Image (cartoon, helix red, strand yellow):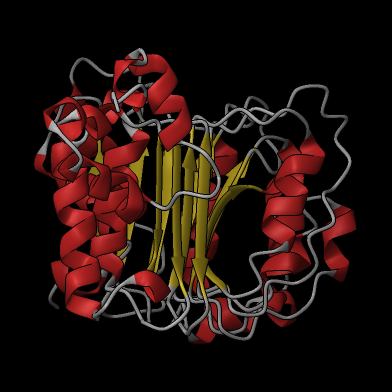
Length: 363
């Protein structure tokens, strides 16, 4: 009898090999049929791995490693990884997922029935609608780290997504306008993009674990409202403000001593203000922090616009002004960055990248 199947075109054979009933280990086994099949599976558009079908944990890891080396990743459109019996090494999962994401991937399925530490990073991802993102995050009940950068939601109408409370979330870097802020009540690190604090934020819950907060401010009232919200972050140690051209008009704000948030007076160790424009209102913000923060160490100011002959002249002028302000902390140090790529810029970038200001400064 002739082998009619082997005479079929590659496209049809690959379609057969991509059927729901075939796992990747079954597909690879077809390479033993004949020379015709030996390398056919290299162009398979579907990769599906299930640890329950492997004879051992080690062989399961080795099989995935070998498969991703041999296949043409440009042809992979579906990647599915199901683990019911083992705790996979996070670094391995990162390598595998990053490998297939570089292809034309259309479908990604990850299932871990364990205490696997979960991190979800989405950069430049387009969803068909807001409900799709809502459904995805609602199912991530053990999510520990969430990063959303340049996420596109067509026809989004500024309605807060209902994803419940993420009780295990530790790190969040998100455009906060998508969610109610109390979603992140349990985090230690929180970066809110495109968010300006308003009176509506005054009812936010207490963030008992939060030590690092980064915010964008857009309006003149943003800072005033921010100060009134700071009591909700009682353990805050690092506070970074990213200005978004909101300081165009001078204004005055000096809370009375009994209005100073406890986290500022007792816990704040690092303060940074990005986008400084040499306006009175900005000096008041820095002066407020310097005056009331008892354990403050580095204060980092970065500026983009200045009217001085050189970056160094602007830096020296700003340092001179700020150095004259009363400082509550004896360990406080001032660092000023200007547009030129000085050592301060490099240090600041490194600090933000690693989310840790502690070991770069010794006092």
